[in-house]
Image (cartoon, rainbow, N blue to C red):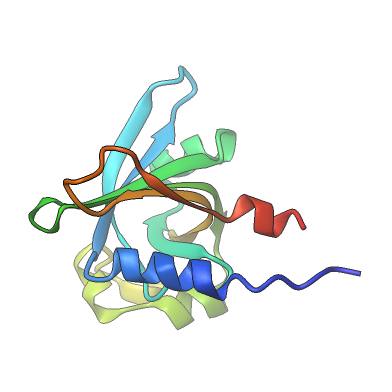
Length: 153
């Protein structure tokens, strides 16, 4: 029997930390262990199970990297607010049509001119494992929100 764990406080804290951010830097690992970062527009709200979603093309290099190395990092910064967030997660690709349609936003048309009918359109699903964040200049040590312990209970 699977035990239900209330992750709402942690997810709400994560939502508060990411409020106002539309874009983060997604970092992936290549076969030669080099790191690659690129800006990605966050899709809709964070799911209740601490999952972030990003639209992408199936034939992009980041997809190849994620197929080999699922661990990713997404970073957000708002220096004027002294707010910095670093998310460690596990990524996977999905082409589920219902999810694509449910998460589509018109503003994405800029990157995907054919819209939801783009033949190579997919979603990157990033399950958040841990969040480190800094919210003021008074502390050089991060605060941490861990989702791993919750998912392993």
